[in-house]
Amino acid sequence: MYLGLDLGTSGLKAMLIDDAQTVIASADAPLTVQRLHHGWSEQNPADWIDACKIAVDRLAERHPAELAAVKGIGLSGHMHGATLVDAGGNVLRPCILWNDTRSYAEAAGLDADPRFRAITGNIVFPGFTAPKLVWVKNNEPEIFAKVAKVLLPKDYLRFWLTGEYISEMSDSAGTSWLDTGKRDWSDELLAATELRREQMPALVEGSQPGGTLKQALASEWGMTGPVVIAGGAGDNAASACGMGTVADGAAFVSLGTSGVLFAANDRYLPKPESAVHAFCHALPATWHQMGVILSATDALNWYAKVTDKSPAELTAEVGDTLVAPTDVTFLPYLSGERTPHNDAAIRGAFIGLAHESDRAAMTRAVMEGVTFALRDSMEALKAAGTDLTRITAIGGGSRSRYWLKCIATTLNLPIDIPADGDFGAAFGAARLGLAAATGADPRSICTPPETAETIDPETAHTAAFEAAYQRYRALYPAIKPLSGN
Image (cartoon, rainbow, N blue to C red; front, side):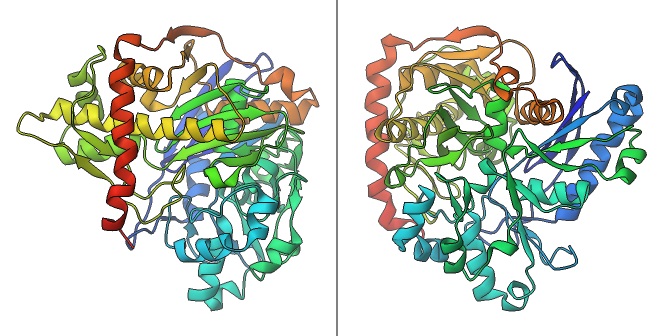
């Protein structure tokens, strides 16, 4: 048996698979986000440990024999979070999360240093880890002075599981400290933020061993041991492993809290000016590119809260039949935007409202706005040298056929829907645990699922969606002077 642990923003998921990669069981535990100030987003790392205990304990209660047979554990987690610990391994402050934008000024300062884009292959985004440490240095110097290790969220979970400070390439590529082409920490960039290599965890590949489960925890969960902990992956790379998106040109769209257009590459293809992320993949000698939008299903969740309806009620009201966009346009920049704008201060808007703009029209506009933001990401990927021929859809938002039809038509790409099963980050993490424990070739493990259905572009609506997209594109420069800082 192999266990995947996916530390998400809203919860931790534990998944058991066997040697044949059949999902045996899974369990979840919820997490919450604290937003003490405008633009802030934090979690207490102790809550991750509690959630892990709850989820694995539930598996131990329901499937004790299967859990006892675990030989490998893979880790996945939300990226970029700054988890700061002192020399004794004690957490110094709440973790500053990926969607925290307080360090936008520090990010701009680092990004103005040409070494960061040249070495990392990426813009220094406010959500990345390095600017968060500069913010801590500037605003909490007494905490900065005590920092012995900077850990990404899943790697703090690893520290609790193993007692070791280890990370891997895909997650570390989102810190602004990794030489992404060389797959190693950059001493030059660390020095630019007044940090040293000794304050970083050791690096392994995601499919390689990255620690061993503590005997006390193995005994508590009934595992006979030894249990290898894989390097693991950042959440999107882990999802790619779960989806089998590891071969050059393979791609998926993820409609989760944030939205991701992800493409695997067999070589390093940076183009930071496009605001495309060029990161290491979780497999050796593999990279990937991502266009990232900060609010995907989060935008629909926000609108559902405003209308006092559930997202399911709103999407049911829209139905499955694709219709041409109305004059209502929604800009989904509720917490800023990454690809292609790199703008932490921009905020969302409805444009073109009229008396006839009913709730369904506004729901469609929200879904279209997220779709157009994903089109922005596709255009950025093209500029960075990646042309997509088809994509696979994952994430909670992919349950909406309307949304998928909207995306297929706007991107002019067929969208494959996987056969029933959970192929997300927890499954990908479990696959990496299998590879690390057995030494098997991870490419032979990370294969794509069967396709249950393909959503093709609806050519009758192509022109209408293209016109609506061009209107959407024109709105960002129009509202930028009126929004934020």
